[in-house]
Length: 132
Image 1 (cartoon, rainbow, N blue to C red):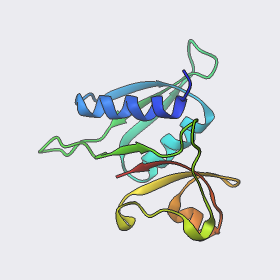
Image 2: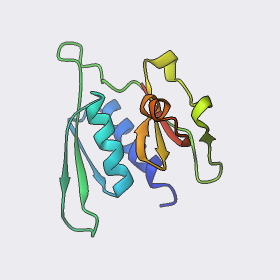
Image 3: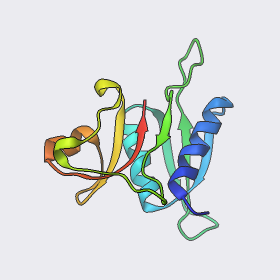
């Protein structure tokens, strides 16, 4: 696998479009931090880090849907910085997703944080993905 972040986003996207309740993803430290952000911002229902067959373990994510219409909470997951073309943003030119309604996950020197937190702390970094 050449791009584990794209695999992470694609597994969530596919499970959401197939209306699965739980998706199982191989873990890494970066994926764990991204999962925590998704939970804090209300895009997923719950998550659990499972130690198991591979050394890093796995992540079980419970996807969130509207109770009546069964519409997924995540409308779009878009990978921005790819292995062939990295995208970086400075603190003063951080992206705004749908004019602030969505979030951008950014890998900075202070850890993996959202675009709003990066603006508050005045740090830039690699723009990993957009979520709304």
